[in-house]
Length: 378
Image (cartoon, rainbow, N blue to C red; front, top):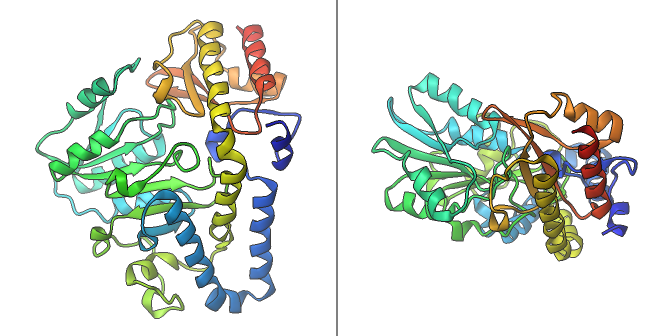
């Protein structure tokens, strides 16, 4: 793993424990990204009107094979936020209908749903998932208490952002399917982090980031749309569509794929990102998770607060842990300014949490640096 650190552009003087926020692009992937940018700039008109479409199709094929769906069900977006926005604004719900989610969802998504819900008279329900969380049955029971006869949509993270928990969402989706409730999965942290097979998941929509755990360039994400929904989901931004240069194969793809002039290079780099992941990251993920479990135990010992799960299947390469009440309010600044540690402090449900991420460029020394710093601060 130490040798792999040289494959990334990260400042070697920083202890970087925040891969979960924006990822980090390896040098070979970044060079492929720049190669596509140079192709674009060499002859932008010819490339955008002709050569780009086959390259985009190749990226869709590579990604669909990796995430377990059909190429024609994949749309590219710059981030999961914009992907979900297109789903939200296409929904045909009635006044008094409900959208159900957990209270662990990403703050930006909660805000987007609430603004849309207020405008359209749709109630956005955040169901409390009590912590600490122990069993899959407890999770399912707690969440399903929020379902009513007015529940039309379930929006749920597979890996949560503030609490870094891997939710066992398959049983939620299966139960929702039997009751005709639409399911939208926020899988921003999933690709390249845990196994993914969207067709086996059987959700209606799924969004994932390429730039996080798959280590693609910034501005590369996707939206899976189950084929049965292709006739009614529409883009927030309309451009040329079928009247433009995009050869298809479907009007659904044409409507979404070209939304005005933009650099598509990050999407064209997806196959290189997947190859790098399969060659260098995937073989070491068990080591990364073991290091993360060391942080899981270290947080409990050093911080003196209870973990929010039993570890195990609830935790992947991220862990979030509550800070003690005596932790300085500016602890993030202290960790950065005095120890050069990049790690997020998340405010959630009135409490502050420290969230670490472990990627293949991290090692045991990084954990020791963090724990020693926390001991000194507290």
